[in-house]
Image: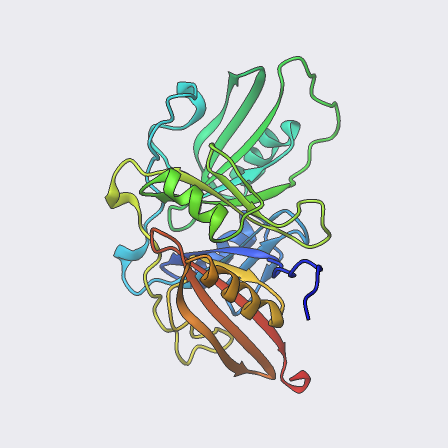
Length: 308
């Protein structure tokens, strides 16, 4: 018996970049006090805002050598020279409203944050762009970004310390090859020549997975996260995963297997088959997909143990 109904694909949910840091507590304290993240958890989370905003997971690096903020990406020939800093890379791109960027920078500065690149503007293809760089406790670069039409006047309103959206940035060895993989293997719904890849409907009520891929200037600059250190016997802190994490994606329990089968059928590499664990009244189902450069995308399902 056959059916004409389309096969349902798994839905990607809330997505967190994962960063290796020197000290989880100090890193989370920085995100709480300087970037005003409100949700700080024993699993390494630091989040700000229920939808949009920003969120990440920090894990303890096994070695100081494993703390490697992104280097400066290879310059695109079709962009103006002002489009990127020549000294600092980008680990996260944070979209903000035009009249908020300078205000946010001053708020971060007043809370002890380090501004590595002051706000600057440039024009490109009929639009004005403004960017600024913040560096976190371990030297990871957070780039605030906004743009508007050159003919559009900014709306006059009280500025806010508000993040609209945060997108993870990663350096890759072959941008075209990576874009093809994210489109044809991971099943991203939108992939463009600027390195943007998204899976999920941006108009849907649930979040989507987004990433910006940049061409590395050197193969040495392509650095997926190493295995983190295990944090044992520290009250309130999870000891950490059993394999490397670069991106963690919350998905429903059923969709972990659905997405793994989908990616496998398209020729993708399943770095770790779905693995079920339990802790503190919860069951977890994690699987690891690795992209062409070895970056690990973790699919994470969870449910209460009494719901199994």
